[in-house]
Length: 103
Image 1 (cartoon, rainbow, N blue to C red):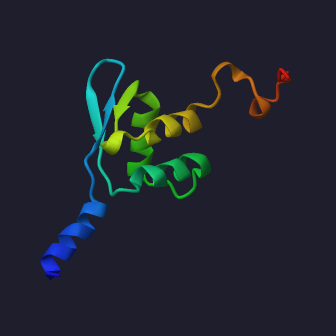
Image 2 (image 1 turned 90 degrees about the vertical axis):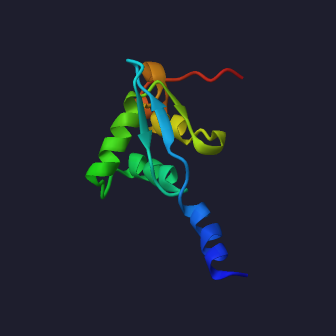
């Protein structure tokens, strides 16, 4: 296999299309990164440790967006938003409120 062809195949796995974020006012923002960048952001969103200024800015964009379009139709932005915003209505074990689970 040609070395240039092999490098091109490897690069496709590392560089992806940007993730497009739709903001409440209708403007569009994007996040660029390697193929696993959103996965890394989800880990940072949970732990919050060793957060770079670029990651903080991207997490803020994700927190404020109302919709997204990810390469391949993924839903990592939705997951990250859920991690950042927490439960809706403040119900659940993480909110120290009693929850009755129907049986």
